[in-house]
Amino acid sequence: MPRIEVEPGVEIHYEDRGSGTPIVFIHGWGGSGDVWDLQVLDLAGDHRCITVDLRGHGASDKPWGEYTYDLFTRDIHALIQGLDLDEVTLVGWSMGGHLALAYAAEHPERLARVVLTGSGPRFWQADDAPYGTPAGEVQGLIDAVRVARTETIAGLYGNNFHRTDLTATKDWFVQIGWQVPAFVGLTSFQALIDNDLRPQLPEIDLPVHVFSGRHDLIWDPRWSEEAHRLLPNSTLTFFENSGHVAFVENRVEWNAALAGVIAGRAPAESYGVDGA
Image (cartoon, rainbow, N blue to C red):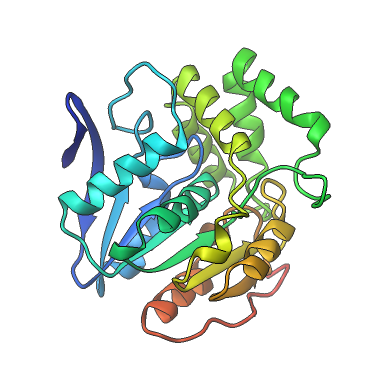
């Protein structure tokens, strides 16, 4: 099991498969690198696919403490430096996309591009952005993670999916989420709530490709639209038969779009047929 030390006494787990252009995949809140299994299967024949379990998640170490974005981005940087990666395509889902934006703002030198899926610069509503989780519900979500972590993860992960024919996959995602200790889930969710990255986005010159499930109930697609508006070098693509996990629900189109942007092709504005 490959691991890398990110600070004295703390190691994170990663998998490194295939060869070619490096893609680093960052999972979302409560996830693990395993969520990218279908991307590795489809893409590792032509690309070097590196999946990572963020600190506190999956098979990585889970030391006691507060899990902040500064901590996660330092760990991602340690991984990229430790593997001596350049021209990286950094792919992030949900909180992982939020982290990818934060990382790109701090360390663009190792990146070729960023791909977000089911993500954006902010999670919940703002005074000037009346979409996303309503402000009045945010504390309730935080409290739910604190007092009923297991049920909250089951509920949130259950809402990841738009399609109704992926029950086993939905159950598998929930089981991945249950691996995360309560203190990790709580403090990392608080970090997600606390970080509004809109001020940094206009300074990110890298190409950023924003992928969004048309029916995302977790991260409002209007935040994807806002990311596209604020990023000076970006595209926006909707996957029409997907919720929060377009890389699963529109897998073929999603993987082809990712391979296309790595090859220098602009993605279409929309893929997939709703109801197909």
